[in-house]
Length: 318
Ligand SMILES: Nc1nc2c(ncn2[C@@H]2O[C@H](COP(=O)(O)OP(=O)(O)OP(=O)(O)O)[C@@H](O)[C@H]2O)c(=O)[nH]1
Ligand SMILES: [Mg+2]
Image (cartoon, rainbow, N blue to C red; front, side, top):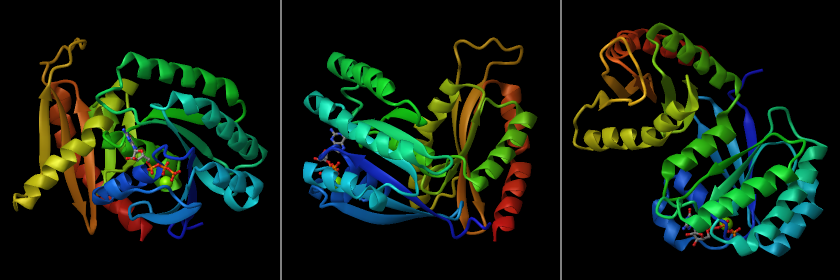
């Protein structure tokens, strides 16, 4: 089956004013509309097409007011069928509404437990986890209690819990990438190329991003390295794009780093780099984390081969 005409339905659910519409505006880079965001009237559908993976994602933004929630549950076969993922958004700054949020979550889980497609994912966003308050005692406690409650509610459905904020764009890009592109057939092919590249270079984390900074594929030797790369990747691409605005052709952005805990027989000269790869009409970004000088040299040495493999893969999709 060709994936190029594939449609995926993704639902954004949660109570009113949780932040669903704002998240979608950030993902679409419609920052100027953020100040005018209004409560969503019932369900709004928008499309997102990923040119690299050839997937069209139909995003349903389900307005969270109580009267609408009743409608969704009442007409579940209209709203809760054939969805690839559900993003359930909880405002972690509103503890008074946690109970109600968990009740609606339970309703949704009951519906999805009855039937859902293969590879279905439930992503619970602990949202409004803004950078300036995320370590506050109250917020930390709110997150802890939600983590606990959620895990006790969900039994048969695969889920993950992510902390997000509209003031932390990488957190949203990561969440959406997980929910929309994870485990697609094409993403797995990109994954295989990254695996091959890592096998040759011994680098510790590699991410492949599309031009909008969505993560198309990733591989890492450990979770922390992966999170580091995910959180800085969009910022590095921004720096590169800024330089391009000045007509400066920027090939890569390199940060020299020293990892404190690593014992290496080689010189300790780690880097994280972002490399621009323009292949045909497609713009890709590669981010890699190298722990020492030898890995750094190898990671650059094998870039042309990786670029060639990516080119062949993209051409095979045509
Ligand atoms: N502090 C903070 N505020 C946010 C964040 N995300 C959204 N908001 C604010 O939360 C309010 C509600 O956001 P919406 O995006 O309209 O929420 P919604 O979930 O779409 O609400 P309904 O359409 O009624 O279901 C707005 O004032 C946003 O500016 C966030 O990450 N942090
Ligand atoms: Mg809305």
